[in-house]
Amino acid sequence: MFRCARRIACYLPNDGEIDPRPLMQRIWRMRKFCFLPVLSRLFHDRLWFAPATSRSIFWPNRFGIPEPVTDPHQWLRAQELDLILVPLVGFDPQGNRLGMGGGFYDRSLEFLQGRSRWLHPRLLGLAHDFQRLEAVTPSPWDVPLQGIATERALYLAP
Image (cartoon, rainbow, N blue to C red; front, side):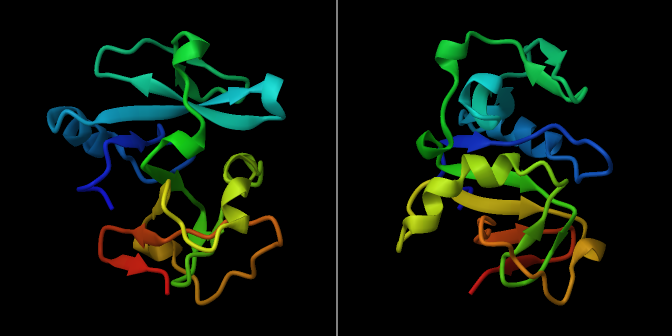
C-alpha cells in the first residue's frame, strides 16, 4: 500500500492516537506528497485534505486540532488520494474501526461503500496493539479499512 502510493493522507495525533509524524518525515524524504485532513463546513462536515510539508504553518480547527494553512484550491477530496492513514480508538481484524464519534471519516469515505473493487484510496488504520478488539459491530454507514498497522503487527482485512 505505502510503497506504491504517491499522495498519502496522514493526520496529527490527538487524544492518545498513534503518532504518524515519523511516517510523514519518511513521506517527504521519499518525495511523496503528504496531506492532512481539514474540516469543511461548506461540504456537510466532510474532510478535505490539504498539502503539508515540513514548513507548513498550522491553525487549530473548531476542535482545537491543528490544520495546515493553505489555499482551499489546493485541497483534495479523498477520491484523489492513493492512501489514507486513519486514526482510530479500536479495531478488529476484519477492518472494522471505532473512531472518535464524529463520523468525519465515514462521511468523507462513503463513496467507497458502493464499490465492488477498491482502487483508490487504500485505507490503513494506525493503532496501538492494545486497541485490538475481538469484534466491532459496524453501523451501516461505517467504511471498513483494508488493514491496520500497529507497533506489533499488520492486520490485513480479509
